[in-house]
Amino acid sequence: MLPPIVLDSVTHLSADARGRIAVCASHGAVYAAWYGAKKGVSALILNDAGIGREQAGISGLAWLDGLGVPGATVSHHSARIGWGADMPERGVLSFVNAAAASLGLRRGMSCAEALERLGRADLAPSPAPAALDEARHEITEAGGRGIRVFVLDSNGLVGSEDAGHIVVTASHGGLLAGRPETAVKSAVRAAVYVDADRGLDDAGISRLPALEARGIAGAMVSVFSARIGDGLSVWNDGYVSAVNGIAERRGGAVGQSTQDFVAAMVAAA
Image (tube, rainbow, N blue to C red; front, side):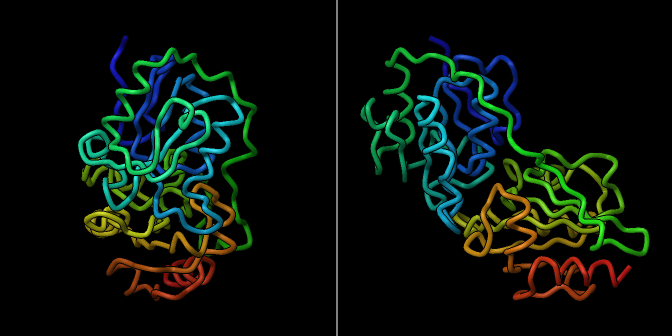
C-alpha cells in the first residue's frame, strides 16, 4: 500500500495520484474536490477554510459523496491552511462525508488516525467527474487605463499573461508552506484572495506581506462574505477584511466591496 500523498495545494496533484489517498492543505470547496477527483484520488482530506458563506469551505465533501469518494476536512484552527505537513501532524477533523463516516472517520479524530483508517480500507480511484463551468472570467467593464480584470476560481489559474493586470481569485490567502514565491505566479498589479477566517497563526492572510514585498497590492475578502472556491461570488459578494500597505496607499480599505477595491486599484494606475 502506497503512503498518502501530502501536498500544500490540491492543484499540485499529478497523474501519479490515481488510486492514492491525498491530504492537501487547500480549502474544501467544490473546485478543490473536483480537482482531486479529476486526478483519480481514492480519498481526499482538505482544510475547512473557516467554513464560511453557505458552508462553501466544506461544500466539496457532499460533492465527493456523489462520486462515492471518502472526504473530510481538518479544522482551520488545528492546521495552517496551505501547509500540507500540518495536516497529518496537527490536523483534527472538523467534518466528514457519508463515505468517510462509513469507514469510521468522525469529527474530532486526528488526521493521522483518519489516514490509518483510510489506509486499511479497500478504496477504488474516483470515477472521472464531469467538467466544471468556466473557471476564468474577464470583467471587461471593470478594467481601464490599460489594466484588465480577471476573476478566477483558483490562484493556480494565474498565468504570465496576467502580469500588470488585476486578478480576483477564490483561493485562500495563505502562502504554501510559508514560501513567499507562492503568493502569486505572475507580476500582477493587484490580487484578491479569501481570508479563510485567518485560522491558525493567521495563515489565511499570509500572502499579504509577500505580495507587498513584490510591489503588488493585496487584499483579502471575508470568507463569510463570499463563497471560497467561487470566483464570481468573490467578485459579486466579497467585502474586504484585510489589505497590505501598497493596497492601502492606492485607496484600498477594509470594508470595501471587492468591486470598489478593484476600482480603486484601477483609478490609482
